[in-house]
Amino acid sequence: MIKFYRDTWACIDMDALAHNYQQFTHLRPNQEMIAVIKGNAYGHGDVQVAKLFAELDATYLAVSSLDEAIRLRKHDIKTPIIVVAPIKMSDVNIAAEFNITAIAYDEQWVDELAKINLNRQLKLHLEVETGMNRIGLRDVALAYEKLSQIDHVAIEGIYTHIASADSDLCSVDRQLDAFRRITKSFKPDTFKYVHVANTATTLQLELEGINAHRVGLGLYGINPDDDFIKTDLYLRLAFSLYSCLTQVSKVKKGDAVSYGGTFVAEEDMYVGTMSVGYADGWCRSNQGRAVVINGHECEIIGRVCMDQMMVKLPSADFCIGDVATLIGDCLPVNRVANELGTIAYEVLTLINGRIPRVYKKNGEIIDCNLGRFR
Image (cartoon, rainbow, N blue to C red; front, top):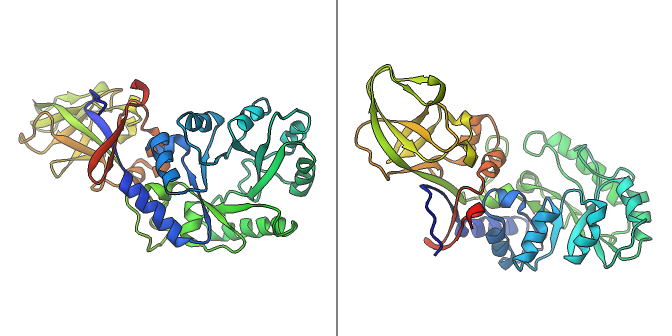
């Protein structure tokens, strides 16, 4: 097993990932699974997660850049991969070379594609603008007509992206109506894959005329909004983040802790230090929140440093090496996100390659990803 020397690490529960995948396939048994693993598989580690979802027979893996897709191909991932973000025209032949599906998302992009020579078949899904107003085709019929005339282009799918399924189902209905008007203008078997549903949509709506769904956050065990999205689906959190105490010290009343003296002890107290900080993606706004050590919630005091942070300990009964949970069953990532005023997506993807990922299956370590240090 690869060894790492950091007192901070993430643990990825592969059994939880497999469980969540199966929960979604059982929820929507008549739809193909497009497993979203962009952003380093939402911070979980793209290669290891891709291999697992490939073993579980995902129809597609979805990423957000050609670089992410090629990395998976170079790690022998054979499952179809779609890049659900723009690919530069100068790079479409590279996408075709690696058998990576691109999206046609803009009328100018379509016109430019008609002007280049494709070396081999390029598979495309059409992204349709229905209300997200990020990227997407507006004149879908014309784009389809132009693309159909280009040699080596295979139009495989059509989709849109739902903007507010975690907050406004009326806007979802408007987007779905717009999408259906477009798809009904084509013959029924024009597209092999028709997909709109992200995690929030999949959890709430059973959609007619849709034969695939794109699930991201839910595969990692997280409901995008527990208050808005009510579901009986049992999801298991796959990501935990831990650190260890590297020092336990006593400070006196009036002593300041960390940069800028933003925390001043109101009484004699014990302080624990651990080696995690904003250079790991554990941002400074965590000050004032808590971690859990030996069953106690311990407040993060003073400014979070680049590589270290301090916590208030309730007593002297703590030792160097005691493990702190930063994210885990006792501190779910949605709670962390809510306390930071953000979303779970951001919390997870901020945890960067300085943090080793340890992968467990059946309670045993099966792999370790050292990120930037491998």
